[in-house]
Image (cartoon, helix red, strand yellow):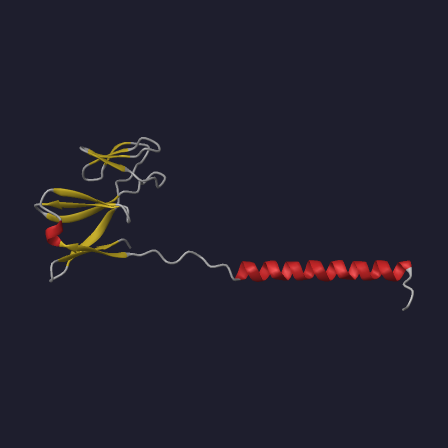
Length: 138
């Protein structure tokens, strides 16, 4: 066994810390690069048969969030995301209210009271020949 001088010991210690910090940095970089992002959000929803939604009904679709309106002119869908800061609006008897900042929308999604200044987004809904409704969010 050889005797290590103080200088050699400090050099080995320094090199050991450099290699350790390099390995930790490389591990962190590999972890950062292998990060899994959120999966793509679903943009097409099968809402089921038309018979499920009677005339003059308002059906809240929690998973989207949206509301399906069936009127005499057909089906329409309004997003339940407030156009001010993205809070979920709550359906009321005469329209919608944002619980975060107090914006109010009429039954058609038009702004009645701010701070929101744009109406609720209309989403595309289609009826297939076999009688099913499909909602598209993009």
